[in-house]
Structure formats: C-alpha cells, structure tokens
Image (tube, rainbow, N blue to C red; front, side):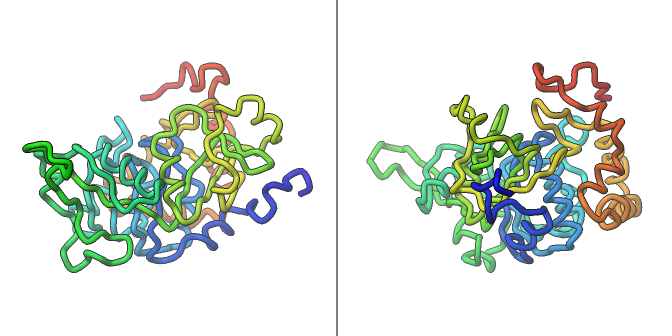
Length: 325
C-alpha cells in the first residue's frame, strides 16, 4: 500500500464504504446525470444490504435513482428529473412508486437543485433565484406539513419575497440549502494522493460533494499523483474533500463513463422490459442484486464480451458504431 500513501485510511471496498457512511434514514446524494456516470457499484451495494428509509437528493438522475427506489430503499426524494433518456423518459420504478404513494417527492427545477447544492457548498442557509416563479413548482409542495422541520427537510419548500433591495414589483425565490449526509459519485480517476479527476461534464457532482458531510468516490482506476499534475486544470476534487475511495472498474454500468465505456443498451433494454412488471421486477432484483455477492460477480454476469462491446474509443470518448437500439 506504500504507493497509495495519500489514500491511507480512505481506500476501501464498496462494502466497507457503504457500511461506514450509509445507514437507514440517511440523506444521500448520488452523482451523474440520467445514463451518465451513475455510481452503480455503490447503489447495488446499498440495495443488496436492504438499507431503507433513505432521503435521496439528486439533480437529474436516472438508473441509480430508479434502482434504489425500485428496491424499496427510498422513502423521500428531492429531485428535478428522473429519467433514462429514450430508454425511459421517466424512470419506470420511480414513476410506479410515486403513483402508488410509496415515496414522497419534492419537485424542483434543474436550476433550483443546482443552486440548492451550491448553497450547501457555500455554507449559507439559502440562496435566491428567479427559477420557478409563475409555476406550480413554487406553489405546490410534495412533503406534508407535519414533516417540515424534520432532519433534512426545510420548514418551507421555498419562500417567495419581494426584492429586499427595493426594486418595485420584483420577486425572488429563496431556496433552502442542501447538505446531505453523504454524496456518492463515480469518477474516471483518483490519484495516489486522493485527487479526483472527472472527464467530461461534471453536472452537479462537485457542488454536491462540497455540500455533503461525507464523500464516497468510486473510480475506474487509481493513477500516479504525477500523472494528474500534468493537467491540473482537469482535476475536480481535492483529497481533503474525499472520505472514501473505491476502485470499481465499470462501476457506473449500465450507464456511461466518458473515455472508458458507453452505456449498455442491451442491459438498459432488458431493465426497461422487466421494470414494467412487478413480478419480473422482483425476479430482476433477485437475479441482479440480492443474488450477486459483489460487484466483480455482477461484472462476471454481464460478461466480458459485452463489456468489451461497449468499451469507449479513447479519443472519441464513446463507442462508435455501438448499436443503441
């Protein structure tokens, strides 16, 4: 472990990271966007452990959100959007859970969620915005009044006030800060000193991590510190913000990780088909979650041929010629 001196005490298995930082009732945040860079290795571990009553907060997530909701791990949600692109414009198990009243959802706009994480990162209790004015996002609340003020739930969804600096007929929306117990993201690389590099769009991941009490980073690989120093402008998070690092190759599957692999249309289409039916969904959980003892076993089940099929071109960043139907 000498070559990982900067990771001493932080480098751990996904099971160790989840056991240490995620508990029943935690408010957790997952990174990525729809079918890009979801921290699926961690999500499968959370579901496998049957952790429950989570308050999940995310910007615009897809596969990770749907799996956690579908596995019964989530009780409350703050989110702008939950979808898997053309595979599921609205995530299927997420939609079913909302329609059945199995989860409570607080709905914000994309900009609102970004700003709420930014407020948490800045250490301020709220942040002003114009987003949502004139819409039901401001007018309607997804959480009942009796929950207001509980841990992780602000006393009001938003507060609309007149501009305190006196501009006539000018309203602003005050958005409560988000400070999750733990943020979980997947990155391409972490260096031996603990620096995190995310290639491509970072979405709201950086603000989420800065706002959270603890940060778990799963990554494709660990690289020498000197390598990340060659292009320091591409580095995303400093070591002191990261509490746990987990090496998890293909750790976002079936979602995509730029320059490493594309999304897996075969698995996403299979998921789409079984998620629509409760019995088939229960069988999916038994086969792919509860019946798989580790992430390595999950990858073995996917199969080396399929993983090679979605491997990204290292210049283009995705898999040219991949049949995405």
